[in-house]
Length: 324
Image (cartoon, rainbow, N blue to C red):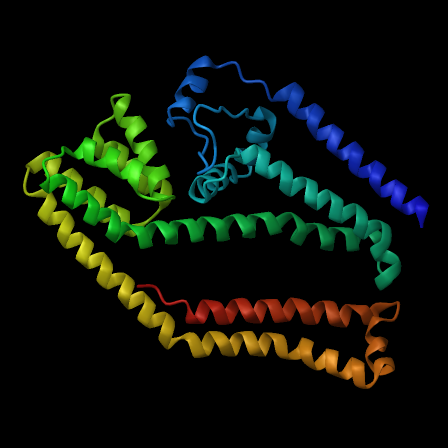
């Protein structure tokens, strides 16, 4: 037991040292203009809610070229911005690659003897989901953060309307939002204010925030501000109307969640039922259930069953996910 454990520790250390050395050699970026812009929130790196202001990140040019060559770089950078993670696309790609390599090594080393298949094939089957798991987590975090921002928008617009009616200009009202509202709205409006302070027009800065977050509710706000800047009008009254529209939209979403709660609960029960039945059969007749885990091809049966359960759970989730 000590030998395989020592081998795994040494292998993990070698992989870690390799990536640290790669970052040290390729990670230096000497573009002072980009570094200066990043301090004011205009760079391409996303700013996290807890990230200290003025902190610059280092890129990995070679890894950036690779992920951009496969068309993954822009989408990954967009998801990182929406999730508010203080990482570059190259750094996150290295995490995915490291997890995939670790899963491949473990699967090729031990997986072949467990399922009776060639080690590299088992390693590849383990590496693909391990490398894709961080992408799933990132998209979940991005969707959750966008949803929190959408839930904050009616209250944000109410504060904005109150500030405008009290005599504040639009930039001053936006600065007040960046100081008083909780994250993630404060983080995004703070980035808007830093862009405005560098000379960017307010509609363009707001449009960048809407593009960055990918929210239809923000598009309404940006459109209203753009129309007011070009044609004039009562911006406070327009934003008040948009606020009421967003409140009704959120209310409708919650009603849909309530109406589909039975279907979502059914999906959870159906997904958990095979595992609960298997556990019950194990306690009643352990020898009968342990035959599924004997060495050989028979071990593929529970593995395929788990994959099908996950697919079924995802399909049910897509069915009950009604867009408003």
